[in-house]
Length: 255
Image (cartoon, rainbow, N blue to C red; front, side):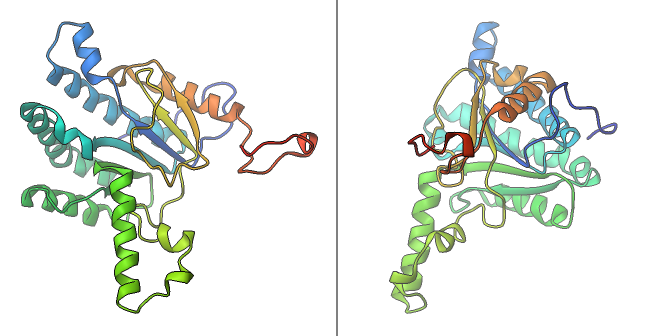
């Protein structure tokens, strides 16, 4: 996936360990050019490949991409079918290259209602790359954070009903252990493209203390420069995780 590490842009000393991206703007990109929405999605897939390479070059350890939400099923059937086909082609065409580059692939989201062949593709991608030690590529597919939290709550309730768990003992760690992202670090930086400033049911639990960067760049145009700029903005932030820094200890706040 890469010809070797490239230097960071001026002012960037290191990359955040976990970057999550809400890939938005494919349809608007196509509309602005008088093209069908499918062409926007095709170009979006090219941006995805480009971003995986750039993330590896920057030293990002985990890259999570929001590819298809639980709400996306409401789109026209033809568009949904096209998006599912893109995922199939990505796994079929890119998996070998990702594996060779040492990328570990992980898919999060509900698999209960997916077609059997799609579930098999997902399982093959994960099993083939499970031992890789490079970038972890997390693809959020058929994913919605509220659905994820509901599934985790049902798992806890089932354990409590079966007597395997004292309800009074349930804590944050127990819930986190039943989320799709178990074993992954929480995101440091969440990027949303296209100028929208909402998180659209994405990593609601995990991103509690992430830094958010909203860029006007439409996803098909997202490139190394856009990623560098988001990382540079991340480094300009002061992360306090609910605490305060010594010079501002007298200030009141919860950020």
